Each structure stands twice: as structure tokens, then as C-alpha cells.
Length: 162
Image (cartoon, rainbow, N blue to C red):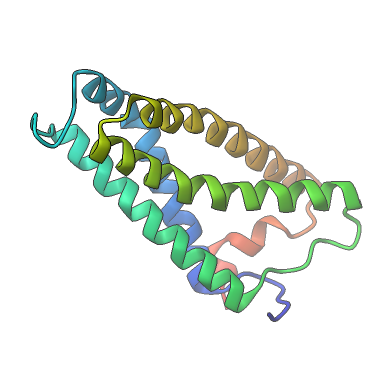
């Protein structure tokens, strides 16, 4: 794993792709929840909303697996030297949780549809609340770095790509 001043171009592209896909899922996820609760199953016929939600969820799953492999290969830039240890640990935990949630959620959604499991569907829905908390924490961290002008934000901008 090499140490960089910025993320690899692929990492930056995948980050922003996942941001867009997740935003789309949040905007349309309510429709999917309503579809599931109307006895969604493969036998009952799948609505357009369910198909789109499933395709986008699958794209998130694939993108996150590629992100995990890419991050393992390319590493991540080190935190700023001035960043407190506790903040570094919180940041690493938030990023790790993103990977877990954004891989587990599509798998749970697919499992819910394939099995018709209300329990797994509920878990999938509740996990979206956890994802929202992670997003808020991530954005708060980004704003904190922006206010400090420590260069962290520039690491994930396409103009700084290698």
C-alpha cells in the first residue's frame, strides 16, 4: 500500500459515482418501501420503481467492491499531521462503516426481494438511517477540513487527481 498526497483517479471517480447513486436511492427509496409492503415478490410482478432501485443498488454494490479493492491497492493519503488522534480514529471508523453499510445494504435489499422477508426488508430500511448518520458525519468532517483549509478536501476533487 503506497502513501499518497491525493487519492488515485479511479478512487475519486468511484467516490463521486457512489455519492450520486446513493443520493438517487435516497430520493427514490420511499417508493421501493411502499412497493415491498404491497406484497412485492418476483411472482407478484415487480414495479418500475423496484427495478430501478434494484439496478442502482446493484451498481452501488459493484462500485463499493471495486472501491474496496482499489483502496487496498492504492491506499489512502495520510491524515494531516495536525489532526488529533481521536479525530483520525473517528474518520477511519466512519469510512470503514461506509464500506460495510454500502456493501451490506444492497445484499440485504436483494435478499429481502428474493425471499420476501419482511425482517430483512426492515433491516435494509433501518440501515438507510445508519447510512444517513454516516453521511452527516462525513459531510461535517469535510466542512471541518474546509474551514481549516488543510488540503484534505482537495484530495477527493477531480482537479487534484494523479
